[in-house]
Amino acid sequence: MNLMRRAVLGVADLPPVHRLFERNRYARQLADRFVAGDTLESALSVARDLAGEGITVTLDLLGENVSTRDAAAAAVGSYTETLRQMKANDLEPNISVKLTMLGLDLGDEVARENVTRILETAREVGGFVRIDMEGSDYTTRTMQIFEQLHDHFPKEVGIVIQSYLHRAASDVVDMINRGARVRLVKGAYAEPESVAIQSRSENDENYERLMKHLLDKGNYPAIATHDPALIEATISYARANTIPPDRYEFQMLYGVRRNEQLRLKRAGYGMRVYVPFGADWYHYFTRRIAERPSNAFFVLRQVFDR
Ligand SMILES: Cc1cc2nc3c(=O)[nH]c(=O)nc-3n(C[C@H](O)[C@H](O)[C@H](O)COP(=O)(O)OP(=O)(O)OC[C@H]3O[C@@H](n4cnc5c(N)ncnc54)[C@H](O)[C@@H]3O)c2cc1C
Image (cartoon, rainbow, N blue to C red; front, side, top):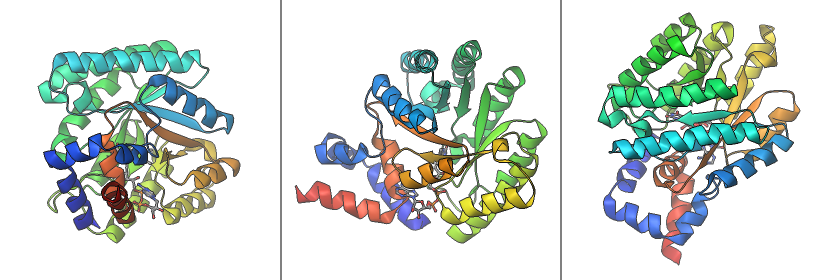
């Protein structure tokens, strides 16, 4: 599994491949399955449709690894506007941000100041900001910045923990101790053995262990997975320990297991869908493809067949 992911992400990062796919209109059409559109208006429209079914959202403006302060400032402007527009559209203001889109490559201080601007707006509109977790080169800095922000914005900011990281169990304990809201995911990047579990079954076991810990002691954890066995394990564990459904929520990605999203919602569980939008879809799209080898073959066939 991990070998396949490494291969797909490695090839996708090669500049000629990036150019070929980004300009290919069939690749773009396939990306549309996972991306709500280029504009905030298109994301709001998807969010309103989902709200009609009782499903909440977190909106993600696509983009990562900006290299100028201007690009980071532009992302701050887009995100504050997103929070305000969600509020204006009677949607719960909830966004997901990546620190490398907010200037982390330019220095911790740049990213921290930029997220602070966004958190001030979140506080104004009663919203919430989740800091996504990126590749392991950024984990320590992301956790440190998160903790500093959480001291000032305990209600408005939350973090993501990737169960494949060897450090995940210790991070979960730290986050439980500070009462921080955690989204638990398996992890989407190609990581070396020194930092991450390589086998799918071991990662699943670790995910289940951390899920139970978060259900027992965490602050409104988000169980973010499409994995049927882990979803079932969550429901059973919560039931057996009389943890009511309003103490946690499930999260899934836009375009993945839509029927399951509806089924869980109708069964009385909180369901939040992560809705990405924006023109910078390529890297997000390749991570979704790498998660499922059959998706990769499908994409290659579509692009080269035409
Ligand atoms: C709300 C949300 C936020 C996330 N945020 C982050 C983050 O900040 N950092 C990070 O590293 N990762 C993040 N991820 C991605 C995560 O780490 C996994 O890579 C991704 O969720 C796939 O793992 P899985 O738990 O669904 O299990 P898997 O074992 O990968 O999948 C289980 C089943 O789900 C279905 N499925 C899963 N993925 C796909 C797909 N792409 N296309 C079609 N079907 C699929 C298949 O039926 C599959 O058998 C996030 C995921 C979610 C749901």
